[in-house]
Image (cartoon, rainbow, N blue to C red):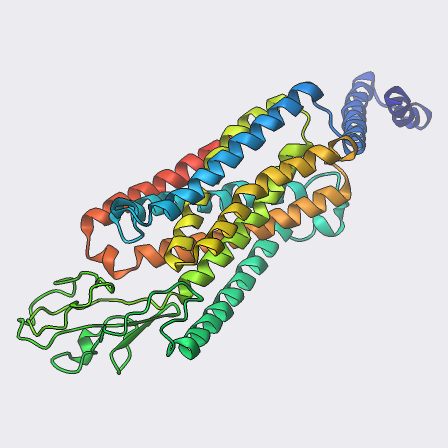
Length: 423
């Protein structure tokens, strides 16, 4: 067929040729042959299920089994470490080690959205196998990512409002533990009433002394005693142990500015939206690995996916731990995350024999889902993971924690980005 296409393209040159020299005819032939070869190879590529010299069905099947086991163990370990370690001092959600590890995981998620998912969606929607209209007339990958980010913002806001109101209604009942929050009726948190000028308010502080930061209701606890006003805003910054009944009920004179008691509603929403974003792209990458019959493609994917599933699981497990879900709910969410990618690999393996990755339907579906997942992951990484920790009072008051956290953030983003060379 290829030679017929070439002869058919050259035929008009000899029937309707003008008085041109032989050199011009040679140039015309050399122009037609590559164009015909490109068109023919493109047609063959779009109609074939897979054209890979490294294709080996039996070896690919064994590697898929290895991938299922490796990714399952990596994801389960990543999400389990924060949940199991929340009862250990060095792995509690308020420890410096946890904050720096979470910063690394946030960098991994950010690079996954920008470098892997958005790039994959762009490659799929710009594939030459797709019709020129409308896919070549508009930047759909960025558009779908933007739409996903805006929808995530709306869901984030509405979910936070819902859980805050629900908690306010049920807050009068100390025995209610639907959100897993521990109630301590003996704790009294006073607000600032004396000695604080309007210019000294923390960003977001209301006139009544409460603080409202990104949907989190917090209150500043201060003791009225005579500290010089020259002290910085970080002086005396420390957390309250809600479980201690004696707390700060006595009348000694330490002032605690910037003390925050989160309601927990924000952490509940963040954990659920983050799991939605991670699960949506985990099923996509699982199917993509499952449909491949090339060991050369699967081998680097095993290492790359195991790496990023572990740290995505760590970030998700940290959010679940901060939300203080019941053990049953936390276990269900952790198992759902850990099983998603292996299930996707199984689905891809089942349909691999009849799946054409270059068909219009497959390319459009992959491109749209990759772009949507990129928008969700980028939003969650920037707003709910990075901004929530790096713009917090604790981070601004601990210079050493700032340095280490930024280094871990850049390291996680850099390592995950570098994996795009192989996968």
